[in-house]
Image (tube, rainbow, N blue to C red; front, side):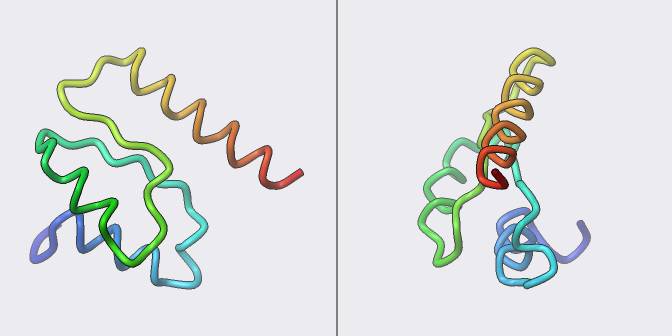
Length: 74
């Protein structure tokens, strides 16, 4: 992401009417980002995982996010 970091991209997505409803899971090797991500003036991510991440952990988080999204639609 030349010129932007993940925090900036996340915030821009949450502010964009066409992108704000897309579920986002933050995966980072910088645990201190959690505070920065959740202390924003935009809705928080749907998931957050610290690296290193296993395939099992990733899939569990994706399933959780999709389950929540399905419940909201009903």
